[in-house]
Length: 108
Image (cartoon, rainbow, N blue to C red; front, side, top):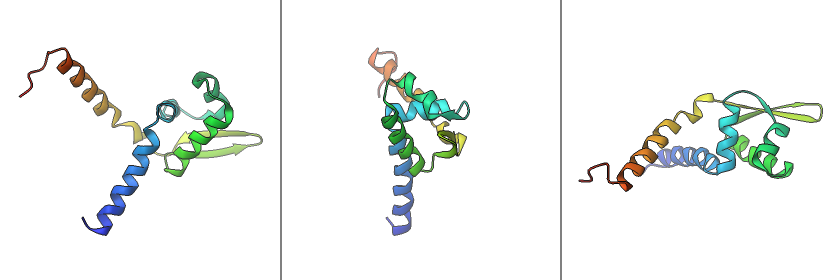
């Protein structure tokens, strides 16, 4: 593997790792619906404010979200809304796995 290819793979891995936590993936899915204040994400997750902020910081460092500070409130949006497009493929894999476990798919 060339150095350039390795750098690209590492950058892709950073994005995937940022989304590879249930809370962060949920936050990204919520932000796909539109801008959210940190305060709107805290209660549904059942996490404290600082934990949610840390998760959002990981998403920001990976280039997934944009931040807009307005007074004491901080609002987040998805920087590139298509970042979650791969979830359809992930759901197809999960569906196929479930079918295999139930014996509904022929395994060759």
